[in-house]
Amino acid sequence: MTTIQADPIRTPRLALLPLAVEHAEEMAGVLGDPALYVFIGDEPPTVAALRARYERQTAGAPGPGVSWCHWVVRETDAGCLVGTVQATVRHDDASAEVAWVVGTPRQDGEVLWRLTVA
Image (cartoon, rainbow, N blue to C red; front, side, top):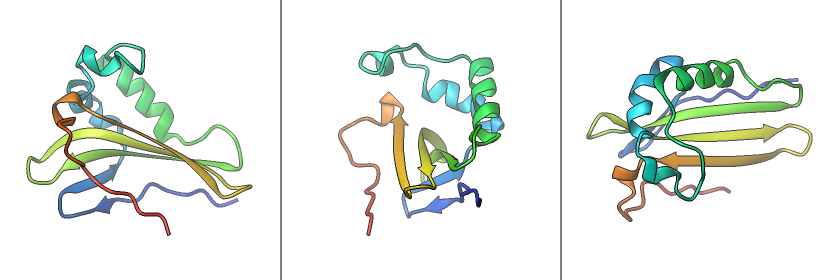
């Protein structure tokens, strides 16, 4: 069965870049505000915890019939990471679950991007 890969996605304002373990240090800063976890639970991850998580995620889904796609979100003008997007794609019914996290400094009520599904 074919595995779906997380290819780069670019807009004039944002770039979704395939997740790499090397993103852990910068993402620890993005995800470091305890206020981010008030509603979603958990606590800010350490760089080591993110590295371990990103190693697991970039290795791919553990079972057949599912693809994991993980991206970091880079704001083009600022040149910094601002969040993550994840998709779990199920091949048997062609469905996908999408999740995202945007760091609190970028949660200013402005729409970062719009997703259109045809």
